[in-house]
Image 1 (cartoon, each protein chain N blue to C red):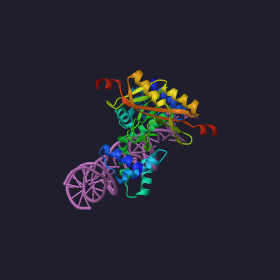
Image 2: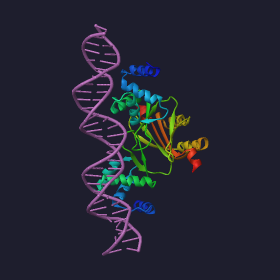
Image 3: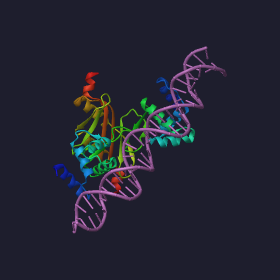
Image 4: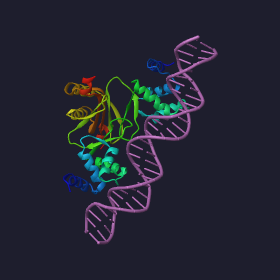
Length: 144
Length: 144
DNA sequence: ACTGCAGTTGCGAATGCCTCGCAATAAGAC
DNA sequence: GTCTTATTGCGAGGCATTCGCAACTGCAGT
């Protein structure tokens, strides 16, 4: 079993879940992708390795992984399919260019600053910060 | 015609749209509500004043208002209906308590700070910032 | 290894939110 | 008031996601 498979098995096992083919396939796809994918896109890649895996199972695996804190689901817009990505320990957020449509990841202390501000000044204890910024990326601003 | 109705008519007129019964009803509901509502909730209130107004028209009115910058649509979670509220000039964001479910509005310069940071350091020109913070509100933190 | 039994899966139907197409209606310019 | 065309109501449709259930399969115990 590969290293990632072992990691997944441990995480699942600790929570009383089993390591199954569909789960491993979904995990491999998400873990090896640099960007965020929709459930449908993940299902497509999963089917390349095992065509019997059902879309429902992809959804179920993703929900479970999210519950376990292994992946993150993000809404990039109303009426758009959710996007999924590995949960990174560093706080990050998304920048979406309204011109080219590209979605960049961005890490920084902005998120932590927000948390501190809310906690200190408003007694609100943040557990998750979802930040999505729409605008024009540097490249598109240059070419326009 | 009431003051809000005149305001709406002006905004619509400038963009080449008509002031209609359904639009006015939707506007009244959104403008007189302090919180954000789902399209379905808005439709319910609209039907109290005019039962012939269709849900589609509510959606169409809301989309139009959003395009004109009169209202804002926000996604409070994956697979949840969008919530709609009057567009305020001051930048605001949402705090959602995972314990009591309440969604608070919050205004502050956080959003502006984010915009400045991105513009100065990363050449990303922000047009809209969506910030949703999940966590425990002061009240829930006190009673737990 | 073999067995038993939850936890999982595949499948298809169902749900929820939202959008569309189209004929009928009505706003507002003249 | 008339005319033009934006807008509406209605029902059907679309898309992402979830559900119910019988069949299947990890894996713990033997």
